[in-house]
Amino acid sequence: MEQIVNLHVEKLPEGVYLATSEDIQGLVAQGRTLQETLEIARDVARRLIEARAEREGLPTLAPLQEAFDYPLVVSA
Image (cartoon, rainbow, N blue to C red):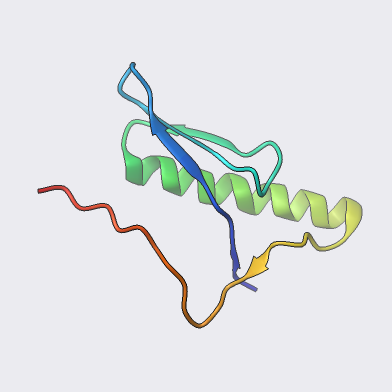
């Protein structure tokens, strides 16, 4: 089942991106590019959700809806 995890992404002074989430405790991902950071965050989120499901049952995240807002990042 697909679920929505809200990420907070910031560009650090060192030039790398850092992603964290209030939805999934412990989710921290860092990458050289925004795309790399999002890919790492997706993998970390998946692993944390699986680990939590083994311990406590399924997490309570928002299920993916038919329509939702998505911030599209475009470089010009």
